[in-house]
Image 1 (cartoon, rainbow, N blue to C red):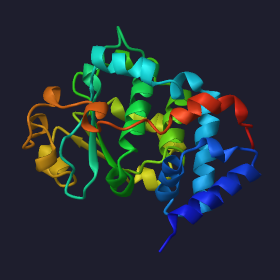
Image 2: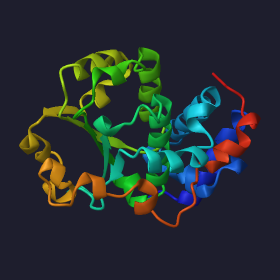
Image 3: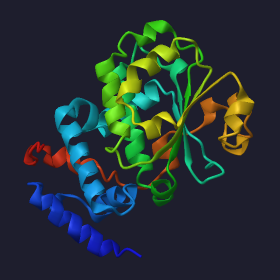
Image 4: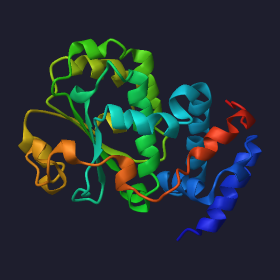
Length: 261
């Protein structure tokens, strides 16, 4: 049995030893990283430093997201959170790529909105424990939208979801995926760990295949689920109400952190 207070005190000392002033992080945030790494403080420290490194190198994608993302999600919404958890208690996060209005939102906006959603969802204790299931819907996703999906950009995605963001990505499901989704996968594949590769599933148009992993009770009717339509589902900040974003501290203190190797 772990003593949370002791773990938090210890990781603050470890951060200080790497030149990072851990006093700027709330107990809640540090505990989120600790739980993400199953109370292994060495791995939790690595994830905090990875998050800082990515935020320092790409503040345009990782910092001050609230001011950008709330309006972007309202103007060009294609990210939704199911009101019901799946059969394993995991949050279901749906990205309908075909609805991406690339005339009003850039690919960087898409990335920012995903990070913002992750920040909101990571504030839930049950989601910290159970993790997240992501569904990518590629219906009406044209090849023209692939023009900015370069290997360097996809590496940032891989860096975020592997040993960086303190939210467990349990499964990634791709539905209505056209043949050229394999091109995207071939570009990101070298950056993925064997574990995450094993958590990616392609279902095409088969709903029964998807239901073998995600129970229909937590899915919208667009995927032969028991809920209403995808379009009527809520955004992350509507599902998770009344919480402060515990990641805001990164925005305020980035200049204080050294980029350690």
